[in-house]
Amino acid sequence: AAAAACAAAAAAGAAPSGLTNAVGPAPSVAATIAAVAGSVSPSAALSKEEIANLASLRSVADALFSGIEARLRAASQKEKDAEAACEAVRLQQAAMEQKHREAESALEAERAALQAQRREFEEERERMQSPSCRRSDVLSLNIGGERVVQRRRSTLCALPDSFLAARFSGRWEQEVDRDEEGRYFINYSPELFLPLLDFLGARETEDPARDIALPVGPDNQRPQFQAMLRHLGILPAVSFLDCVATPYSDLVNCDYGLAFELTPKGNALNLLAVEASAGCSVTAPVTAKIYICQGTLMRRLRQRDEWQVAAIGNLRPGIATRIELLEPIRLQANTQHCLYIATNNCCGIAFGGNSRGGEVSGQSEDLAIYSARSAGSALHFSGFEGFLYWHHFNGRLEYTLADGM
Image (cartoon, rainbow, N blue to C red; front, top):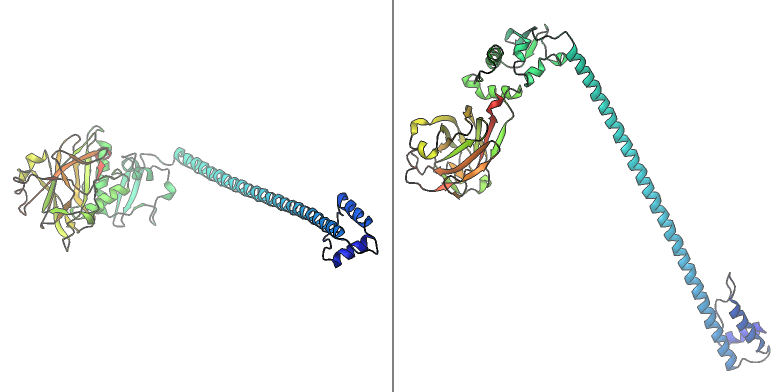
């Protein structure tokens, strides 16, 4: 009878959909089907009321299965979310394991480096304790392949904090260069190295309280001599006072010359070089002389004979140009000194903006530079009288602490 009712409902266009499901219809739907089936005669035509009941049944069944499908989709999504969470946990665990392996590798490398350093330390200690090297040893030195001289080890170690002293202390005996006859090889010419040997001999034998000046080296090789002293650790590390407030290519003020005052603070200094530039309007490098004297600027500008030439070089337009002094100039601590850069061009030296007399243009822990006056004339030391404007020096000074010498 139920089948006949469903067939009749289908013929009327109201057949229920999706009644068959793996989970089966709900009891309320089954009861409804039974009730409708019991009220329909097998051979009778469906009335409007019966057709309405079947349509209602179809709506109830559709709603039921829609809910089931929604719950199934939600369950499927939860399962996917759970799988994604598991995958994220797995990836995080793998990343942690990778970091752990990397940390172990880094720790192992650090442990190996420490062991290597310890072995080197032990080897160096053994070398230091070795009785084979004594300060009284007489060493044969092959200087540049041109001269062979003998000096005590103690003479070469007269400046204990230098690289030269460390090299001949005996700790690096196996690493010092030697010639074919086993003599220590010095890779400098006799003209450069012999003045240093004489200085070290005097330093060893004289009273330690006596201040012995370093030699300046041959007249035609002073820069090379200074470079050798720095390489051997006899000249201390170079320091800089940077007063470049404006890029050299942007400077607009320029003149024939510029003079300024500088004062070392707590220590005496050795001035090594000056960096500056010519004005950008100049088309070729400009010849420049650097003069230095001791005293205040306002007084020394009128005393031409008090100035000494410290360097001669060329200043390039709009580009940083380093001019090394002919020899280091010692600047006494807490004492005023003056520096004058003189050129042969009205735009030969570029400088910064306006300043006030006595104003600090730049300073470091060791040195202070004060405001500068421009020359105003190609006749150097004669154009300052009526010129009242002050400016900032725009450049750098290179120096070392004199106590290290």
